[in-house]
Amino acid sequence: MAITTQTLVSPLDLVIFGGAGDLSFRKLLPALYMAHLHGRLALDARIIAIGRQRWTHDEYTAFIDSHSPAFIEESAFNASDWRNFLARLNYVCMDALQADDYTQLGALCSEPAVRVFYLATAPSLFARICANLSGAGLVDAQARVVLEKPLGTDLASARAINTEVARYFGEQQIYRIDHYLGKETVQNLMVLRFGNAIYEPLWRAPYIKSVQITVAETVGVGSRAGFYDGAGAMRDMVQNHLLQLLCIVAMEPPISLDADDVRDEKLKVLRSLKKMELTDIKRDTVRGQYAAGASEGAAVKGYLEEDNVPPDSRTETFVALRAHINNARWANVPFFLRTGKRLQKRQSEIIIEFADQPFSIFGAVANHEPNRLIISQQPDESIQLGMMVKEPGSGMTLHPVKLSLDLQSSSDKRRAEAYERLLIDVIKGRLTHFMRRDELEAAWMWVEPILDGWKVLDDKPRRYSAGSWGPAASSALMAREDLSWFEEA
Ligand code: BG6
Image (cartoon, rainbow, N blue to C red; front, top):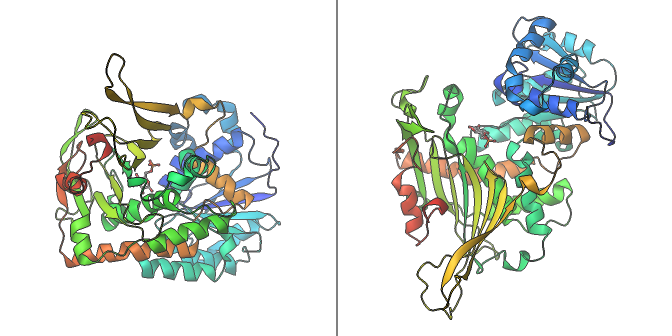
């Protein structure tokens, strides 16, 4: 076990509601195991899982033992550390909506400790869980609550949840999680922008011509249709992950890394997003839904054939759109956002396309490419800068090359997964990489008119074959401005 020298928070009770759910066994417990393995949890820190399954402690541990190791990197898994980790687990079978059921939890958490309540449940339960925790005397000044996304399905429901939770927890105790903010490469974006003097003078109009943000997935809806069909790609991905990426690309330098300084700047970006009217929605947004096709070499079903998807569903599994930020830095620079399931490649990247030279002494160059900064987050973590150089030989022929930085091999240090990093932030009381209430609501304020507009326009998602890059209209959205998505360039 590699022990860190940082101060560990102790005593600590980490209480997970939805302790037997997908998120817990796939992400949270593997992340906590990694934290345990690397000495980032105090020896007396306890993990208390809450679930409705009538399991004994041993049955719960057996469930985690059979489900979670598959989600832990093989090289990090070893039987003895895993056994020690399992010994930290406690299981409480209860109905989180029943106030009377909190007696056992109250008894278990009767000693003073930093208490973190992680609500890995449907958002409709958040308010009542918080009320019950408070009723059971479990919310003190040190307590924290972590709210998983999606936080609501529209502005009104997000506001209602925020208002209810705020009755029991102060804003400084509320951690609204967006796991993209825990990714190493996303955090690195801030360092790239604000830790390197060369970018700042160029990071604006007119030196930047366009920005593309793509989060493409190869997976389909899987077993999540129950949730996903009511959400769609706009609520599931754009409202949170893609807008957060956009904020980090577009924000002004914060005055410090303190949570509110960073969040103030992100909020300004969200508030500067140009509201879309019906004509903009029609012209600048594309919704898609995957049809049968092939994904990573295997035939796959279309969305409508997936389990538990209504045969006439109009839910979008793909969104591409053009956004504008109405401020001095970004005037007239289009931001193209795109995300979808069952696309050709798992790829998450940000492309900053710089403006053309005002005048070229080389005349018209056949294979001229604009300078592009390519920040890849998935599957590779890398930064590339596309440049033109001279082709060897006589004459002055230009050809495009890339300066390439592989972030994975640039340091020997371990790169923690997003959930591990964010859980440690919660434990340590660091809010910088979590969304503040006004930020979340501002994101809904921009997204909601688009969702409403699609309804008014009776917009049916365009079909695209699984394994493609989405509907043709997505390429057309770029082509209209003489631009193209990076992989089509
Ligand atoms: C989640 C969405 O928030 O992010 C999922 O609900 C999506 O639909 C996932 O698959 C993508 O996360 P990552 O880290 O795999 O890019």
